[in-house]
Amino acid sequence: MPGAAPHRTRSGRSCGARDQGRCVRCGAEEDLQFDHIIPVAKGGGNAMDNIQILCADCNRQKSDSIV
Ligand SMILES: [Zn+2]
Image 1 (tube, rainbow, N blue to C red):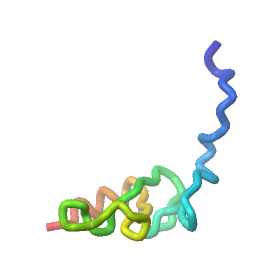
Image 2 (cartoon, rainbow, N blue to C red):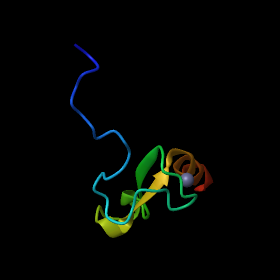
Image 3 (spheres, helix red, strand yellow):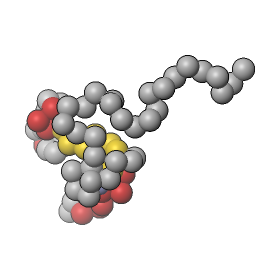
């Protein structure tokens, strides 16, 4: 019986991230992704202070702009 699952965690809010929940660049609240401020390959860690929230668009733009 699909469609009757008692899940209510897809609303996009209260996902547990501390002061985050929107893109740090444009403020979008959809399609958010965790992004390493300093890439792990360049010595960045997985601590929260090296993690920022970007929306899919900004994350893509950031990737494209790294030369
Ligand atoms: Zn954005």
